[in-house]
Length: 207
Length: 207
DNA sequence: ACTTGATTACACCGATCTGTGTAATTAATG
DNA sequence: CATTAATTACACAGATCGGTGTAATCAAGT
Image (tube, rainbow over all chains, first blue to last red; front, top):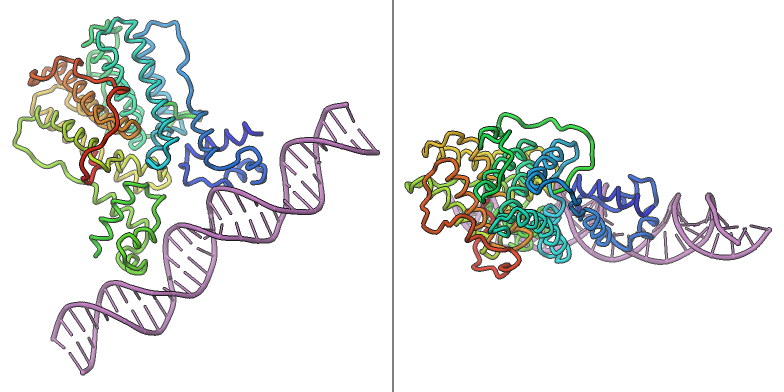
């Protein structure tokens, strides 16, 4: 039951915004009484915390080459953008919505962003990149930038644009990139041409 | 009076979030009656629209070289981040908060983001960049990425990281960059080292 | 059959929300 | 001074908010 509550809260919070969704709405959506919800979560704040904690997924370990892992991030991002329910990064959205007041929310958001950055950094170190720290930061900028842009534009091609930029940054750092489909910035699309139409249903909102 | 209402709404909406600020709060902050507020704005929605419209500033024309204008964007961004009240991009925040429900909000956000992209694109064309469209998109990713990262991390150095990445992208496109302070990604900082401490008061939140 | 624990329905609290109606007050204009 | 327009105070509407209290019901497990 607790899982069902959390999963419904996740869906509604992410889709409509945290402040926009009341506990009554969540309970009604599941078809349970509000009392039951409060038996599992003592307050909405704790439900919000659990929602964000549940979004804090670790990047799964992979045996693929580091470069493919890094660039694969942008492919997964693009699929995420194209999936139906995508609505940006839940952590960034939460901070944007709840303001700096809620320090706990900001803390978990920082932790998530930093974990992603460290994931990039470690892969870059494996590649022997000199300034792995700095380049990792730059890659997260491309990730979050494409997420923000897709949030407002509904244009999954933003992920491809980010990927092309990432390739350039990697090459510049001396990393050998597959080359194959690169052609520098050539494949990057013009955002005013492609947008709209979302694909499958999915759960969306990795980041 | 209308101006005063709008300016106060701007401050509160941006600082605390749109949903988090009631019309009573705005009126009380100014010291006027709620009735007066509603005499100037027929509904909160219209006040929100006016707030976002007021944030839609045009990038001021400049006679400086295109490269300096482009890179200067990130310097202004960094100053914005360091200013006290900075809380991310008001348009992205509004979309994140109000959801896809409110189509008018999303539309103005798209218009703003696109205007910024076109500003980059035109400068890149002046520089003779082949794929000005694509590179302009990539630059906006760095801008929005650094904004999102600073929003959660409170780390103005994200603007510098974005600037360094932008330099690499520009060089890769054949643009002559000042060189002086570049040194590739070398000056990029590690985010876990620098954060906190905000500067002057300002109005913050360009994007 | 009995107990235990979860869930239910439902009323209710105080607070806050957007928005309105109204009559008095104030300020500027002729 | 008289007219007009803006602003005021204030009560109020209807909705929703997060959260609680309570007694009945339901579903195991032993």
